[in-house]
Image 1 (cartoon, helix red, strand yellow):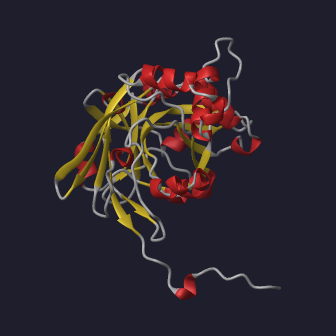
Image 2 (spheres, one colour):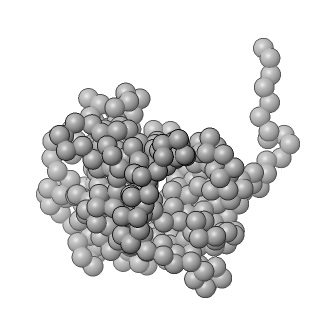
Length: 334
């Protein structure tokens, strides 16, 4: 089951459910957010609630995408209560290099490892505990709130002071927080965890700065479990020509952490268990064009696709203007 949201020509929000190639409006649901919270309160699976509500008119999702009417697949009425976060150094790399990477990091002298490689090795050794207890905690970062979300088909706007704007094809977990502070997973979606890799390369301590960029996810949410072996394609188009295309892998088969471990270490903090909040938590990537020497340019179009997640996620790339002098924040003594 796939869930998405579209805007009607009049601007109304509609929840869309899809099985296979057929998509329909969902009756009795004002938004995916409201649907998920209602299910959390009633202790009902989303798929079961959808079955009870039933379907309305058929929808041409591809046409809605072309017309720019796709909304992010979940929103919060107050954007400040939607949290964009993520974790890195969680993927083993492509299937062809996984064993080589593992052996290299396991045999390296501890004194010669970078902090990043040391963190990666910690995940390989302790990110998938077999006893059901929490494993080692991963790298974690904050990206922003709902004001930083770009809808599928919209542009990812890099600030003018940025050194770079590069895609990161990832899988994101989508969550709502119940009335008692319990996190409920709605499902999983494709995500573009857009980042500034040039800034990050200057010094890894700039990671926090490099991640404060917009992100996009969707267009559809996969309701249910994440496949263990996710395979997809990441590409960049420039002027109608594909300048980069490469497979990406995700799912626990290709990760050094379990999803449960990543979820535990995010939601163990009380600040992330505030009733009614929405969380979009990205699980990391093994593929990015920057690693292959590609420098993105304004006007480029990013596309991420993987069959289980429905339609591909497409976003343009723009750069915002520098603020006028009068818009620069001033600190005044009182």
